[in-house]
Amino acid sequence: MRDLFKQAKENSPCIIFHDEIDAVGRRRGGGFTTGGHDEREQTLNAILVEMDGFDANQQVIVIAATNRPDVLDPALTRPGRFDRQVAVQLPDIAGRKQILGVHAKKIKVGPDVDLERLAKGTPMFSGAELAALINEAALIAGMASKDFVEMADLEEARDKVRWGRANRSKQFEQAERELVAFHEAGHAMLQVVVPHADPLHKVTIIPRGQALGASMWLPDKDRAGQSRRYLEARMRVACGGRIAEQKHTGDISSGAAGDIQGATEIARAMVLQFGMSDRLGFVRYLDDDHQESFMPERAYSPETAKVIDEEIRRLIDEAYVDAKRIIDESWPKVEAIAKALLVYETLTADEVHRLIRGEPLGRPTVADLLSRELAAKSGSPAPTAANSTGQGDLEGPGAGAVPSPA
Ligand code: ZN
Image 1: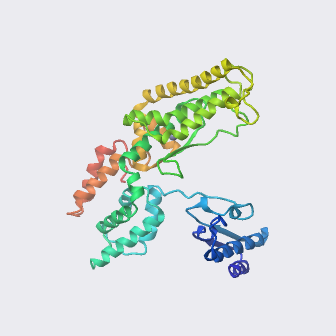
Image 2: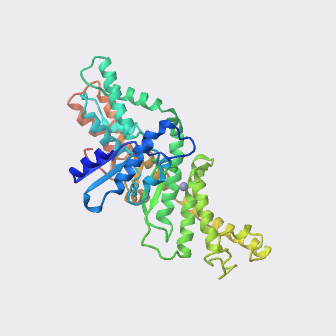
Image 3: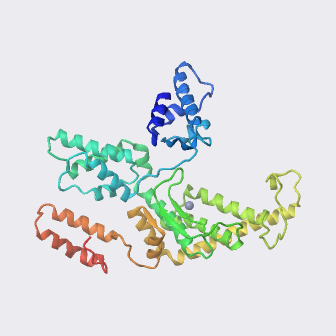
């Protein structure tokens, strides 16, 4: 380790990259330390000592990667060490196509290989899994003594890689993706149409950490204070996921737990801290240690406690009813967003606005992709020059006002 850092300093500017940092960076101690861990701990200590020995103008950047940030020793993530965390998401369709392209350069591919179609068929694959897919396809083609890898090899490899990781693939069956897509579409719809809400940034059904999907918003400006209208808007947006989910599936899921927590916290703060309930007025009902209603000697009467509960309830109920009205009134648009999410996985705010206005997306529509796939299938036995005009005919009526030659 000492030698590595010495070399880095000699070659600066320089980047040191530790892959799988958890292999040496696991939390120390823990009561199970035995002789076998000594070497690991010495390595970890050496990293820490070397990183402390840097000064700002040495031009050496140290980067580490892990899938388990939760098991890392806290000393590693202290300021001056690995103090910036960058979460790398699973790639979306466009990302997967690019990653497949990088790895496909290392092998010989046949003329029928369509990486875009492969990218569409590999939702929730990580970069490492896409690399494994390409390797596996090369093995399959090699065993069949082919000169190059064909689409069928890639598809067989995809299934092998997918079933090789049972848990995740089971989790994300189509029904689950659909549920997440409608949930996020509900949030996105409200984020766009509820007055005073933060503007939508983008919406995705690619899982991030614990959440199954996410609709992301950017605060309009740095908000010093939060107005009542703004907080009410945030509660409405929070309700949208569950409402859209239920309207589509007829059932409800635990996926809204975070939204319920968020909405409840806002309503409580409005009533207890911000004086935003007209019935309770300009009074703080929160003890300094935030233990309000469970305090044995609280600063208010049982009658007031009842009003507090009623007011929290009322704020959330009003938000829910209003959010439901909006979702009901704009249901075809919510469906359009959800369906686009199922095809593209991530939508920008601009794309959501277009769908809400009933405009086509800038990228090929679902109909385009389907007709292209149909054309590819029907065209493959007879790949003649006439194929290209035939494809154009097929796309003509489907694509409507977009006469792009795709
Ligand atoms: Zn949600």
